[in-house]
Length: 74
Image 1 (cartoon, rainbow, N blue to C red):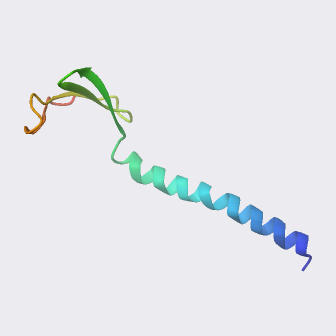
Image 2: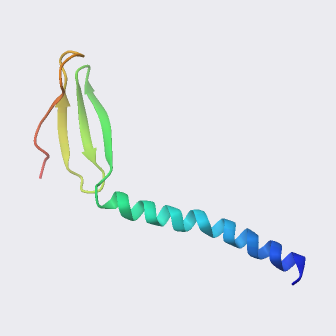
């Protein structure tokens, strides 16, 4: 086989591999949602599920305490 054809096939294969990997990663994470935190105050953060749009507020008064979160919005 022509070396330039082999090189072209290798390049196409290497370029397509990340696309298939990204697609499979997206399908896994889309079932769980994606979360983003936005500072609400010095002791609170809004947690946003960017897939569903649901929001909850989490607060933590002291570093040694467990954060407390509200119920997700509707």
